[in-house]
Image (cartoon, rainbow, N blue to C red; front, side, top):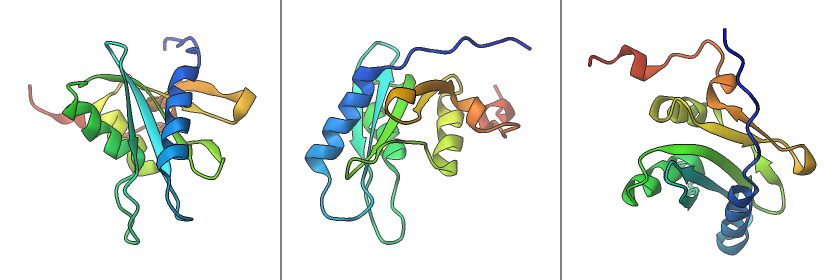
Amino acid sequence: MSVIEPAPVDHELVEAAEVVVRRYARGDHHTVAAAGRSADGRIVTALNAYHFTGGPCAELVLIGAAAGQGAYELTTVVAVADQGRGVIPPCGRCRQVLLDYFPGIRVILGRAAELRTVPVRDLLPEAYVWADHQED
């Protein structure tokens, strides 16, 4: 088993998500912004589409926004909640989707001075990996 070195925290990515959630969050509903860094260095941002039935999370909207901008390989992602709640972890569904689309992606987690960056696989031990079961 190989040891993966901790990745530095991409503070520019955190700030990009914070700006989006401050600027575009409306009302008192659960609003989350996500920011992702593409393999070519670009930052893509997105906001969840709140709906009383659930709606897509910010990370899922981010995947579509990134693809719409030609950023098909995301390397790092972060989600930030509204009302000053800061960085939040992705939900279980988002963890699985991120793993399926970007098996090497890293996720920024934690609070303020304790932010850290971890591989998405660390968030889903013994995960089913969809890509591993597809025909070539």
